[in-house]
Amino acid sequence: MQVKQLAVTVASGRVSRYVALRRARSMTAPNSEEHVLKAVTNSLGLLHCGLVVLGVTVVFATSAAQAQTTAPLKIGVLTDLSGPFADSGGQGSVLAANMAVKDFGGTVLGRKIEIISGDTLNKPDVASSVARRWLENEGVSAIVDLPVTPIGFSVQAVAKQLNKTVMITAAATSDFTNKTCSLNSTHWSDDTHALAAGTARELVASGAKSWEFLAVDTAFGTALVKDASEVITATGGTVVGTVRHPVGALDYSSLLLQIQTSKAQMIGLATVGNDLINVIKQSKEFGLGADGSQSLVAFLVFITDIHALGPDVAQNLVVSSGFYWNRNDATRAFANRFFAERKAMPTKTQAGIYAAVTHYLKAVAAAGADDTDAVGRKMRELPVTYFGKPASIRSDGRVLFDLDVFKIKSKAQVTTPWDYYELVRTIPASAAFLPVNTAVCGG
Image: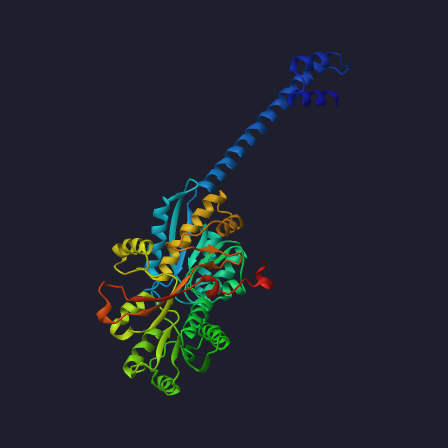
């Protein structure tokens, strides 16, 4: 037992081999010196093997850590690549994200930045499946875009469960920050409250007292009508009624007749996409508002929708937007670069993606890693660069900026291609967006 202990002390470096041998000679056990030599040799061999294994382990651990930190930082654009929102998002969304990466320099913290894209097929289950695959298996750190409310909710839930960053730049419901807020989620698009309530408040103040709504029969349409109606009645206006249509309706004549006979001054169109375009076209054919007694208000409309309609059809339509390509020098500079690639001016969704991706990358750089919580905090701390206008991110993830109310120009007024909007008034962010829901989201 003494020999073994002595051998271990040699192997561990606490005594030298020479000292051990001297001690061994004083031991009464026979052949002590021989036993010590053999034990020491074996122990040193084991120690050497242990050091070799430890060295290999350290090398592998270091290599793994280096591989992890040098792997590309992946951002997924989950959008509508083939359906009714492909013009307002689609490949234009992918282009906007890539422009942001290029302008940022292509790398962050020594890691290459990579943009990938996927098609939601406008199905929440498809969107959530793609999101889960990206976040769990393919190393995606953040997801952006997300057209329509059900898709936004489904992907927001997956991202929250996996604690990954999600930036909603297309779906519009204010519930993303009012009810399902989280540190990993930010909402960049003009939300339903800002579009409906903010716009309605400004128009009622200007004398538009009586309203009727034509709404798509979905949660999105219901939210727009609810938010606008509350503000209209609270500020002295009246809501005559609401008529609803299913998604993908083709004939709106009976609904338009009801609206025309109501004599409401403002017709709020709480619908979107192809449905909105068809409603506006048929309203024009029906002569709705031709005598100037009624005006159409489109709460969620894109520049691509107006371009498809043309000013002859869309003339005098009232719209609201947080981004318009010809608003100032910053919007024009971005839009002209975008147009050179896409041959279309950017929508507010596509502009929002550029701003969101840029801000996310700044937050990653400031946090020193793509850790979701750290990045979420930095996104709220840093000022937002939003095309020449002040912007910030609130604690609940709501991106705050002023909205503008526009009226669509007549064909004679359009002197520059794609320049369809005429500024009417600006809605301050404080009047456009709901306050923080402290009961759900804290302060």
